[in-house]
Image (cartoon, rainbow, N blue to C red; front, side, top):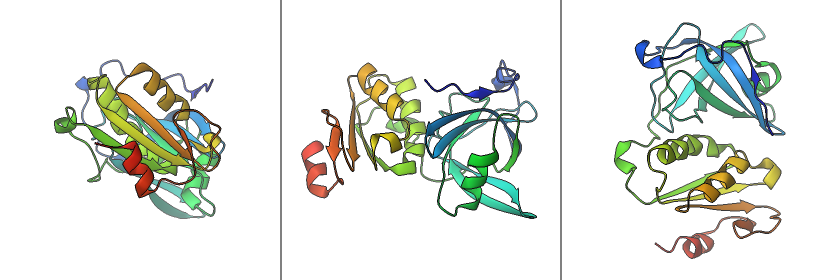
Length: 220
């Protein structure tokens, strides 16, 4: 149902493995899609042909010019490292947040921002592909977890993953439709949503995740 806003060069890079690793600099927004009423995903590509090298869960730092100053904020990458010619940043609007509000109000297809190379120590590596994984996230904290689970399921469609996500409501649940689709397509991917007012369903729970509820859901 969500159609991303695109530029003409969205598919310009045909074989990114031939290009040098991106070392930071300007990124151009090549597509934007609205995830919720206050959250959007931005597909970014380098100005010159380059490939992105990052681990699922890492972030980039974005710099934007606001009122004659450059303001920097770190945003987790939500896309999988398997797609090396672009990366996706998912940003939620924060009350009083200068950079998040600027990006949601101004970053559209064709617009540019400054960015640093991917970094961060919260990530998965190849060694976890055979493990049983419990993934816990809440609100916009789901962003790095989505990079991880997209990457894992692309390699191991039968990966044993229990994904527990807390949000205010179904409408505030970022990637909700994709997570539900993952649960339908992958029998070993289990999804549980904790919502302030759950609308029913086997995987929906009212209220907060507590130690007792976690023990009941994750017996192993």
